[in-house]
Length: 168
Length: 420
Image 1 (tube, rainbow over the protein chains, first blue to last red):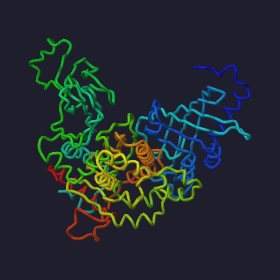
Image 2 (cartoon, chains in turn yellow, brown):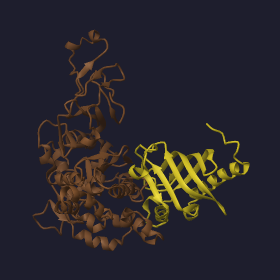
Image 3 (tube, rainbow over the protein chains, first blue to last red):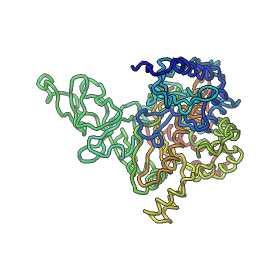
Image 4 (cartoon, rainbow over the protein chains, first blue to last red):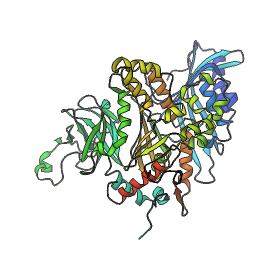
């Protein structure tokens, strides 16, 4: 494992993890509009089935969203008839191993564990666990960072999962 | 004597919950019907293989030296472990991880350590990987049956052959290739719920209503892919179109709805590019006929859904009475422009992923249904029954549950030990 490079300023080494924690909190708190606002207008969110796929356009993806599709995705979660969100799931995102891989462009790799819980009065409660390596490409923006691209490599991307309505 | 599980319109909940019914399905339905496994293009060279399932049985589908596809049970003849552990690859032989028995591509025993200790010539056991009773292909699509006799594959597919024809006809160079990694999802529910759902044209208006309302409310709708645009249409407009479509079924439980894609707006901008590529090799008349052939989702009971227009195949694999795995494979058509592949890929990702706003609601509803069958409950498949003409027990309008009634007529025959 490479440590944070010595050229990385202390400020960046502190600000980047703080930003990732903030992003995770927005999803855990179901503040989807605020979460979406972290993405640039030309942003892209990718969750591949095959992390070694040579060409995104011709490979299976769990999520392959431009900003408009990401917006539709989170707008849907807030519709009263988004059945998979009833009742609303609770989640806890844990981010660790944050590594700044490059400063220009600003590329960040982190590890993510998500535990989601949904109370089901009518059946067994549902617990869903996700583990992934996440790659962020960030842009420094007047109000902090903006996400230009986010790529989530689930460890079981090639496996068969049950529903995952909320993006990680 | 107990009442039948299916009485023509109602299906008792035990069909979804009783492990003994599931065992019967594995033996009498999946152990008899032609089960879909894959396509020739997945194993172009001798030694190429992939793993599939016939019911719960893991099988190796391998190209033999004589270029025939073999379907072999993935289980050592000696003490039972799988002899092939990778989902796909190329090999010269299969080697058991337990005691090192090796098998040729046709399943015959090739060699084993300490042959004198096994006294191989006197062994009672049939010393090979057990082949499927029958293997056949239609337009390169490979099926196997574990039953020696019964209808051949062409007869079994019947009018549903059109879906496989149209799938291949759409390739300007008459060939295709699979994407390396498929999309998969799992439902904690019975496999039959998938077959009940995928020619159900009414559920999208309700189950997926959140997608259409969010789509209509979204600010940058023009930047959405063609699939998301399709899904975010006005549901009322959709219903008008669907009523005009026919649902066609046959006695083996298969079904499709010709013309549905056009009604629901699943036609794509890439159609013109596709037409040009097809016309260049087949002429304009034939190209138009191919692209006008609209079979949307064809259900081939009990193992596969075929979507010629989106170049994808969904394989339904029952694991337990309340657990099912679904694998969606996507194919790139040789000679088709990239825009065609991209549009189909967008569709395939948008609808086949468990993270899909569409599929996640389906998975949720399957689990709702499976969750509490504990009481004396029967499912109702009566929609369309009273509005259909008397003769048409195999055909109905686009909103009818006639295809489900047909599935359970076939299912009842299989479970009684006969062919439909």
